[in-house]
Amino acid sequence: MRKICVITSSRAEYSLLYETMKAVEKSANLELQLIVTGSHLSYNHEHTVDIIKKDGFNIDEEINILVDSDNKSGIATSMGLLMIQLAGTFARLQPDMLLILGDRYEILASASTAVAMNIPIAHIHGGESTEGAIDEQIRHAITKMAHLHFAATETYKNNILKMGEQSFRVFNVGAAIMENIKKRNFMGKDELEKHLGFTIKYPFFIITYHPVTLIENQKQQIENLLEALDTFEGTLLFTASNADYGGDEINKLIEEYASSRNDSYFIKSLNHLYLDVLKHADVMVGNSSSGIVEAPCFGLPVVNVGDRQKGRLRSKNIIDVGYDRKSIKEGIEMALNKEFISDIGNMQNLYGDGKTSEKIVSVLSKTVVSEEFIFKKLTY
Image 1 (tube, rainbow, N blue to C red):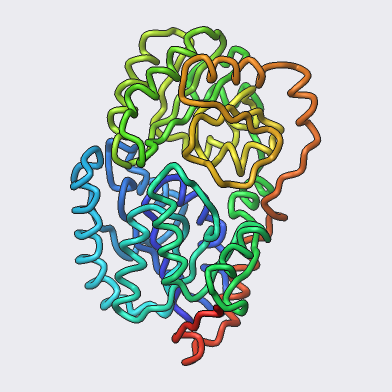
Image 2: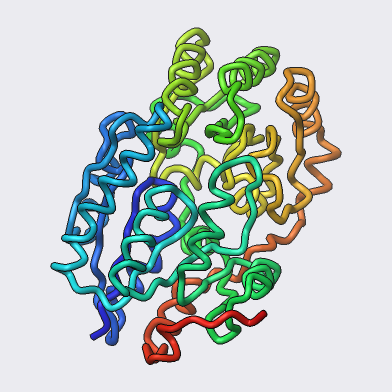
């Protein structure tokens, strides 16, 4: 049995890993090991480790590393703490391969530890671009450390090949979230309202804004966004920012705003309700990657604010706007326009066929971990 060690550090990443983790568990050739860290263990971020346990996964190790995510030195300290504790955990678990997803700082620390301990790495969602965040450098750094690459589109696969990775290591498996959507039995509006605890009045906004980590004036950004939203009525549902530098400040401003309006709500983490909200929403506003990847499946207009997702492949549901109040307001008006909504109704998603976990497990099972596999060579 090949031991596949998965590390998850955030709610968004876990939702993408869920189906693959289940498929690894069911595989006759693979054994799942699971390490949980980051915001999963923070009560400020809903302590989402409880969701993982409720989903039936056995957790081999919980590593608490959050120091002060609203402080740059705190982020660096958290990375160091994770590496120190992972060294002992890897020594105990003796994984045959590390399976990681994305571009968060916790994942960079995990990959760095695996490299130092000669543990092969399989990486999901490489080859992408988010020019407005430090995720950009982190993602490409992990690509150069990884031995297997599971890209979400053919374009992203080719980007990895251009980075000098050998072709036998790189696979287009589609975006992981597509499988979640394909298998989901969606709630009706009444059932969703019961779970959310409020009545949905249209237009229904879903708003998520994460720190743009390469830009300093985050407070002004979120104030401009809230001022733009102040000109619209309906139902405004805010979800929390992630555990990056600036996230706590954004959450505080959003929570204060939501409490000042009787049609606005702040829920830190929607967890498994998130896709149901997208199904019933009229517009998404903010800078989350879910606007780029998930929203097209629902024909959902997205007002994408700023540069955080700059470089990602886009469907025609995306309305890119600047950080200023006027641009955001005009973007929302366009997103609610009946002609625009009709135009995006039949678009196709760019991110795969919903068979991601099946493809990943097949590669993990069949890969021969030989000397040729361990010692990477550049193709340029």
